[in-house]
Length: 271
Image 1 (tube, rainbow, N blue to C red):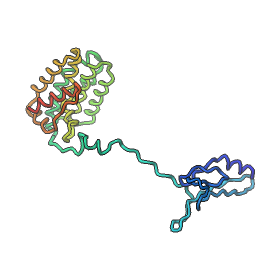
Image 2 (image 1 turned 90 degrees about the horizontal axis):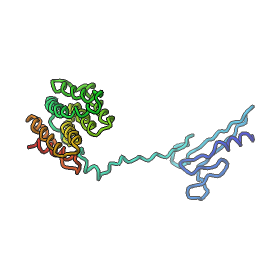
Image 3 (image 1 turned 45 degrees about the vertical axis):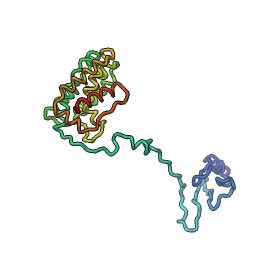
Image 4 (image 1 turned 60 degrees about the vertical axis):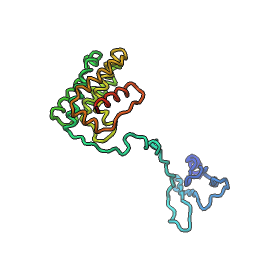
């Protein structure tokens, strides 16, 4: 019997129905400090057996006049739900809030991808000068060209796009990183969704913009070089690309140099 009492003490405290922990052998204390446990009860039955004694703890829910019979369970308070951090004030300002669909066929994607690959290829040498043995950006541009020539969107194409994205993050050089990012977005252009957001149009404009950024950085942050590359991209975009870009909402400057390049390219293609 002494052994059973010691074991009961080792089991520790029990929290009943979300109330404060109650030491074994003491009267449960209500949250208001009254010391009354109402109709809740914690019963410890010690059953003597031949060679050992076991302790059985039966924890019952409170008895209410019109409730179901008590069950041998411990009620657990529901865990609070965490906010996603997206309140109503943020929903109103989101670019992708209930976006309108735009007409964007696979043929449209092929036309844009062909132009995007040409733009991205202009900066490819800047990456290969820093990482001559890394072929991921070049493979991404080649896969984009295959899609533009009546190809299909495949898992391999998506994988090559992600590989170029990884190369952009792994190379320890801003110029090379921007050039690889252009290749990554050229291979990602075929996966642009037909929804009217600047996020989606960014997939189409990104190859030219990041290539312009790479050349600008290589020239010591000479903005004239970046502006000239944007003009080249506008001049070499076929009429179909101009028309496709107009289906998406226009870009607005965000105060950054990269955002300014996006704005220049977007505005130029809308003329």
